[in-house]
Amino acid sequence: MKYKIKCPKCGRASPSILAFKCSCGSPFETHLHFRFEKKKIRKRNHSLWRYANCFPYVREKELMSLGEGWTPLIKFSDGLYFKLDQLNPTGSFKDRGSTVLISALHKAVKKAGGYVSEDSSGNAGASIAAYAARAGLNAKVYVPKNVSGPKFNQIKFYGVEVVKVSGGRNKVAEEAQKPEKRKFYVGHILHPLFRDGIRSLAYEITEQLGWHVPEHIYLPVSAGTLLLGVINGFEHLVESNVIEAVPKIVACQTRQVSPLYHRFKNLSYTPPERLTSIADALVSVNPPLLGLMVKHLREANGDAVMVEEDEIFNAFIELARKGFFVEPSSAVAYAAYKQQLKNKEASKYDKTVIILTGMGLKTMLKPR
Ligand SMILES: [Zn+2]
Image (cartoon, rainbow, N blue to C red):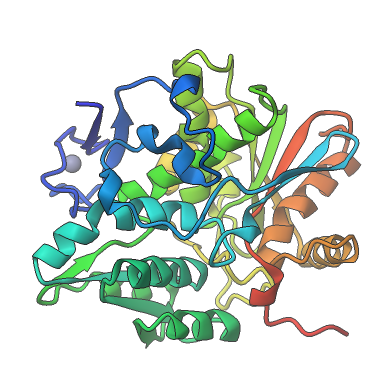
């Protein structure tokens, strides 16, 4: 077998590709038992699927693509590069997870006469909705009551059912997971194959830099799918002897939503009663994967940074005024980079990649 999906806690194997968590309650993880081989890359495929052989649980004829991945990596200044993942088909990096997840299981769900359910603060909901639409699969997307207008509209236009839930982010997840007849929960945070699709980002960055890794990678962190997927991808490249070491991954969070930053630095964290940050895609104050995130970030010798609201706003405006219109949540990573430059914890000459995760048209901010 080229891969195994199993429980990180008790070791039990996943009973089906549709299962998202173990009977012991822990979410499953994917383990790869094959090497990354450059010669197996489909060089003429300019999407994530150029690495199709790295996703062995997806059958070729069941592949559902909207042209995601293989996004440009461009040099911004001195050593700084941007990975333009906001240019994915639904406007966020989540499409990497959705194409892999939906490709892997749409047939099984249809065979059972079922539909998929997902909970999201917006971007993942839009992404799952688009790929479900592509696959002709029915979907129900649960969102917080205050979901941003453009994201809500986008999800609706894909033609799926949208359920608004009041209460915190965890309440939304609870509703989406509530068992109903023929409902298959494919929540992007818990389902191991969604996270597994994010691995492609590490392959792309490395290939685009001529099979070299940068010194630092900055990325925003909320529920942890981006962080865990990227670390996993680089670890796979190390195990396959393609690169020597995982680059220093810097997990970037907002002051309001910073459970990983605090746990990583052994500080205590109390979330605010109400989230008011302009980085409205980062909402996981109590992420179910927090333990896994701390473990993997430590093992990978990474770091965590927290930024303030004014730093996020300034970074968002600065990026826009240089032509990069991204969500304020994406600007969090650039804000963190700037903070570390200022504190001399980073150098502008070090080769650094910032992952721009979501497109600016999704923001509710109005120009002043
Ligand atoms: Zn278990």
